[in-house]
Length: 356
Image 1 (tube, helix red, strand yellow):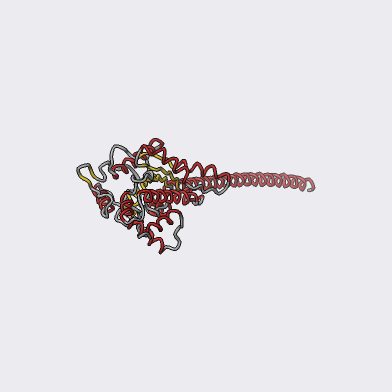
Image 2 (cartoon, helix red, strand yellow; image 1 turned 120 degrees about the horizontal axis):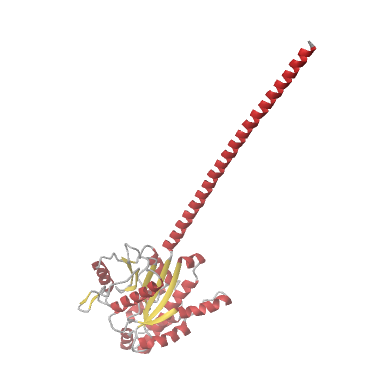
């Protein structure tokens, strides 16, 4: 009996051991399977997370690309071409000089001096506006300035004149040298000497600037070329920028004009080349220059070649100083504007306007 109990005990212990071992083995297998499953799930999660991260990075890259593309779309490269003359008495503002002499309030020298001061006022105003831009504005737009002088023989004299007369808007000593170089970046070139037609000279200057752009890369809509008159005392960069940034120069509006008080325009802005017969041919003039029909004729010329011209609607039309009456109109408008800038031009204009 004792022996049988012992045998049963041994069998039970063996069976228990087998059961325990089997159970432990199964548990180990299950645990291993669970562990593998957990690791597989973890790996899947990691892969999903990785994909999500990669996807996020790709989305961020796409967003960055979109931002870069947006910045490229917003960015403007402005090319401002000033049209003017060297202030030689008898060769500039001849109508103004005639008026002054007729009313015994001046002569050719006074007319030339008034134009000289007006040109300096315009260029210094542009430089001041450009210098006062924020960092963001500087990143959004590059600005190139070129002075196109009427006679090639005057190029050297104009360089000297501008070097001596343009202001330096330096914020600190480090920037002073850069600002002094800014006088040099107002490049001086001669208008085309093969024609006396103002419209054709402007077109050839625009196309010459397009040639310079294309040497560095393809011409894009971000390049905006402006031709600006130097005899409009209130012409300034801020107004030009505001006028041309409201989709004034894009596919649907490839050309824009700045309205002048006398029926002309103080600037024309475009995003590409213009045909040489844009303003008409030698035997078929489409624009009557220096008249109160100039702007309307220019708009019609643009429409004739399929363009949709835009005329600025920012502020009041600008006054020029072609005649004594123009000077007096500008002076009256300036007097009404209490925030006007008092400078040498304003003082001489007041003296001329008040002469009887």
